[in-house]
Length: 327
Ligand SMILES: NC(=O)c1ccc[n+]([C@@H]2O[C@H](COP(=O)([O-])OP(=O)(O)OC[C@H]3O[C@@H](n4cnc5c(N)ncnc54)[C@H](O)[C@@H]3O)[C@@H](O)[C@H]2O)c1
Image (cartoon, rainbow, N blue to C red; front, side):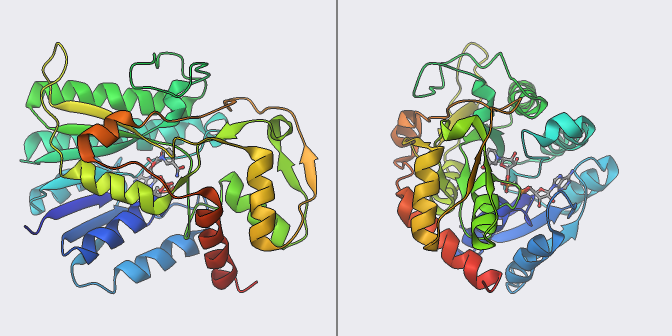
C-alpha cells in the first residue's frame, strides 16, 4: 500500500537517505527542512536535488518552530506516517548555542506532536539519541537502563522528546516510536561529526584533534542499516505498553559493536591510504566515554539488527567523499 509520509529534516543526512528509500519503494514523501547553516548548506541542497528527481517527492522549506506553518502542513496533507528527524543535532554545539535546541528540539517537536494530535496519523516515529544514556557504565546500553542523567542540553532535549511523545501518545492515542540512534555514518554524512572531520583533515594533510587520547568507544552504525531499521519500525505499530498502556515504544538502533577511536582512525587511514597526524587531547565537556547499543528488542520486534562492518561502511563513505569533493 502506498503511504503518504512526512519526513522532517529531509535535507539532512538520515532524512535524505530515508526519503530516498521510501521513494524507491513507491511511497509519497513530503519533506520539510529549514536548510539552516549549522553545516554546509550546499550539501543539504545537493541531497534535495537528488530527491527532487522523483515526482513523488515534495519539498517545503519550513521551520519546525513555525507553529502556523506546521499546523497548515498537517491540515493540507493527510499523512499516514510522520518521521521526525529535523533537530538541532550535535553535543558540543549545545554548549555554544543552547537556544537552537530549545527552538528546534522542544518547541519544534511540540508542533509536530500537535499536528499528530489534530490529524489522523497512524504512526509517529521520531529520532532520539544514544546520548540519553549519559555516562552509563553498564554495557551494552539497554532500554531498561536509567536515562535520567543527561550530560548535555542536546541529550536533555532528546530525553525530553521521549517524555513529551509518551504523554501525547497516551493522551491522544497516537502510536509513537522513538529511535535512539548511535553515531550514524555514511555517504552524504554530516561534516560536523568526527569521522567526516577526520577524513577531510587527513585528505588535506592536516592534523586531527583526537579527544580523550583516542580512548573513547563509539558504536558506529552504517546509514543503510539505520534506514532499514527505521523502515521496519515504521511498519510496526507499538502494542500498548507499561502502566499507561500507551502505544509507545523506544528502540536502540546501533551496531552493537563499539570501536575505539584509535582503531577507527587506523581503519580510516587504510581506506584513505594515508596516515593521520594526531593531536591527542583531553575529554571534552558533554562527551561520553562509550556508546554501545543493546539491539535485542529491535531484533525481536522487527527481525533486523545493524550489521555492516566498520571497514566496509567506512570505505563506502570515503569513496563518496573522494567523488563528491573530487580529491
Ligand atoms: N547522525 C547521528 O549520528 C545521530 C545520532 C543520534 C541521533 N541523531 C538524530 O537523528 C536526527 C537526524 O540527524 P542527522 O544526522 O540526519 O542530522 P542533520 O543535521 O543532517 O539533519 C537534520 C536536518 O534538520 C534540519 N533542521 C534542523 N532544525 C530544523 C528546524 N527547526 N526546522 C526544520 N528543519 C530543521 C537541518 O537543516 C538538517 O537538514 C536528528 O534528530 C539527530 O539529533 C543523529
